[in-house]
Image (tube, rainbow, N blue to C red; front, side):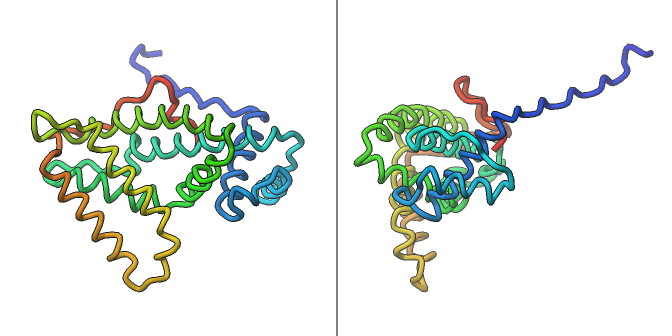
Length: 231
């Protein structure tokens, strides 16, 4: 056989039954958070949802607190995957990449069911110390990954500008807009209303950030998260 012969690609390893069950539990938890809210998300509801949605019985579930921790981690992981694997960012050489980052963040991340689930966890954490402690740890990781992704695409426009700091401001803005979205959703000018403030935010950032030229690759993979994990 020729030494140059193409070797067969290794097949991806299949998940174990325990891993599949864990994914079922997390997906069912996220679904319940969206449809029933945090207060209505009970272990029994999660079991019922997992059985109906997956068509297979789930014999063992951890506590609600453990499920919420796994759900929160999976949410932040999915958000990062959307950024780093190009689902959110398209390579643009001659365009306003800062504009695209913010608009994609709003339209492709903060208006999704996953964002709704995350907001449910954030609000609940005000009165759930265990959940708050979990989110504090995950938030530290989230800020590091967000800064790393943000600093990959734009660069500071001035000597005293910090990409990492500036990109956190629209992140807070977008999250606040997401919290209000259900109130304004019925209004005829809802989209225009939110676009107005998105454009104002981008105008304010335009003097401090600019697109980094020649960037055609996603941000580097974080050492502490496997961004290729199945979602």
